[in-house]
Amino acid sequence: MVKDISHQKINYKLGLLSIPVDDLIGILERKSTGKISAKNETTEFENLTDIKEHKALFAGAPSIFVDDVFISFESQWGSIYSYGSDPKDATTAKSLYEEFIRYKSFLDKFTELKILSIGYYIPIATFLFCIIIFHEKLGIGAEYSNILFWPYIIYSFAFLMKGLWMGYSAFLRQAVYYTPTQGLLQRNFEKIAVGVIMGVFGVLAGSLGPKLLEATKAWF
Image (tube, rainbow, N blue to C red):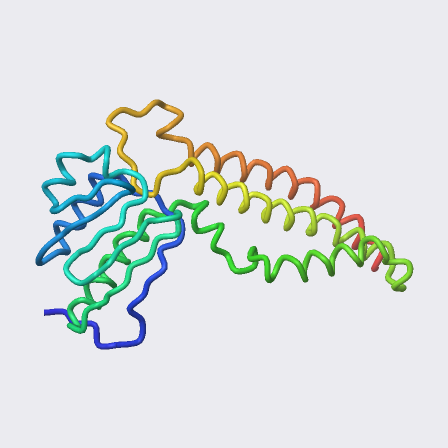
């Protein structure tokens, strides 16, 4: 039997992700060795059979109990933790975590980049902005200010995209979804969103390249 011997981390943060009900049920069936129960808003599910028979009611942000492991998809920032003392519960929690994070999209992973956190953004953006605006008073040449302008724009755009995706995930996207029939737009929404974002980055990079090249000529 595989056992978790680290005893260092029993609480796993899932962050943003979206998983189909059927895939979630399959994972629970494979990982559980005992009782499964769940609740979702005003609905309780006594066992896995209840979940299978009422998939539409289960969709959303359910809380799930698997043996002595608790899974929460509430507030779109899911987490998994073990509240039992048996080492196998910690192993189950870790195994479930590894299964679930496979459902993170590119944009989910993008929003988790540390450099896009508010703690990084404020000092970096403020530093770049001050140099761009007050470069003369600071005794910094205009060529240096021009070089920093586009990185500032790209960085701010990335931070904005993170905020928009988090807003979409919080208000419109279901962490656990059930859609028997999906339209073309629904099936490919995240791919379209990624394409749009990468396209904008491409345009910004295309504009940035010549300007950086022109600015660096002044150094030589």
